[in-house]
Length: 139
Image: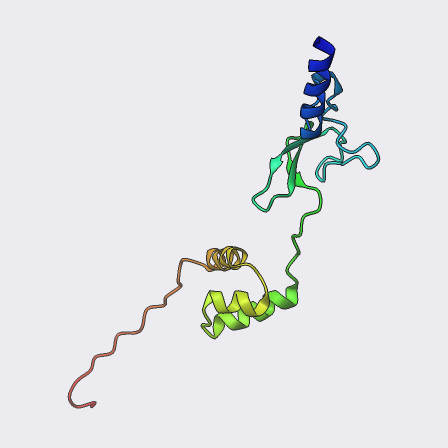
């Protein structure tokens, strides 16, 4: 009777993805064919660490603690694009319009503008004017 109950229980549970604890893979064995390496330190001691807001698996290095995504879609913004952004900012185009035209995210553009603003010197060198005595005769 017990073997029948165990058989039916295994038929129900196993297709759902439940495995006995001893059958679970080690966290270090993410993908035996292509082990991940940390982009910072190059270590292969990498474990899964949840998912990003877009649903991609997030990983964490056990050596240095860095979190990363295996195939991130981040692209570096070229110097030419930054030059175009600077010109559009000088024309007082709204940030949403610049982000749409240049195809960058609004958050990246806001951070870029903030970095530009921080680079502007806060002190202004003002020279004093010579005082002139104005009188009605000179006017």
